[in-house]
Image (tube, rainbow, N blue to C red):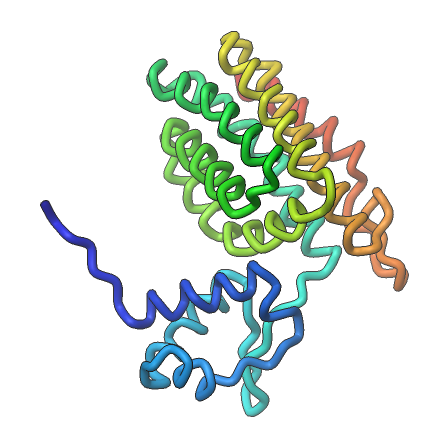
Length: 246
C-alpha cells in the first residue's frame, strides 16, 4: 500500500484555506506570514508557497510592498463565477449521464439521503464535503478534460462562497431539496430534466448569495456598479445551450 505524503506548503495551504472558509480570517484581513509560520511551527518559506497557491485559487491577494490580504469577492465576481457554473454544470450532468457507468450514477443518486441528514442536523462541514464529492464524481463521469480544467480554475472561489451561502438559515435544507430533484431526474434517466434542474439549482444559489451580499436579484450592486447579468436571461440561455448539446 502506497502512502501519500504532503509537503509543509500543502499542509499550510490547507490550514489557511480552512481559516478563510470558516470565516476565522475575514475578507480584507491582513495575513502575517511570520505569525502563521510561528503558529504552524514551520519556516516562512512553506507559508509563502501556500499563499501563492491560495492566490491562484482567488482566496488571497498579494500586494507588493503592502502584504497579503484575504480577498473580498465582489458581487460582480459572484455573478460571473456562477454564470460560468450555470452554463457548464448542466453540460457536466448531461455528459455524466450519457458517459458514466450506471452503478456510479446510482451512487450519486443514493447519496442525497446523506445530504438530507446533514442538512437536517446542520452539519455544514460534512454537507459541503459530500456536495463536493458528488460534483467530483459527476465531473469524472463526464470525462472531459476541458470541463475539468475550467472547474479547477474557479473551484477555490466557489468553495468559499459555498460555505458562506450554506451557512445561512434554511439554505442547507433548500439546497438538499434541489439536489434531490436533480438526483431523482438522474435516477429516472431523464437527461433533459436533470440538466434544467441543475441550472435551476445554480440560479437559486446565485440569488441566495447576492442577497447575502446585499445585492438585488439582478446582480446590481448597491453602489451602482455595472449590471453583471440578468438571472432570468442567463437561465433561459443555459437551458437552450443544454438542449442544443444533446
